[in-house]
Length: 146
Image (cartoon, rainbow, N blue to C red):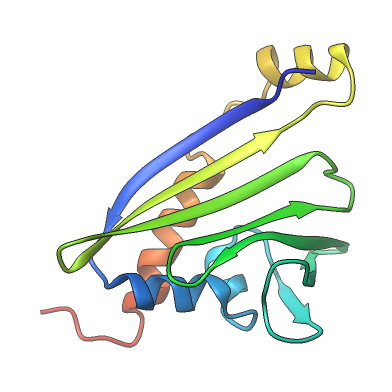
């Protein structure tokens, strides 16, 4: 089945190291991942590691499939949303960071593909845009804005 992909590219006025640290700190993931209430990690994040992620009553597992320090961070979901992959790519642009977030869903059937492609829920803010807004808030929460 052909995957359905959504991509957002935004500039964040912070160094790559700050953005990567925020993305990969399990204690701070709930600050930027929409709907996330908590994250548990069994050890350091690296390719092959797993995270237990809570969204209200739903608990799922993210398997880290892409992890390159200060460059990429990505997971596949092993829970109810099987077939979903989310990848963050970071590029330095002067003192800022270009963040590319890509969601890829491989539907399990043709009818699921049709529903996902043509009958998706219409929302004012797409979850990937929400992630960017939440990253900005989390990065600048403790810094004075002058």
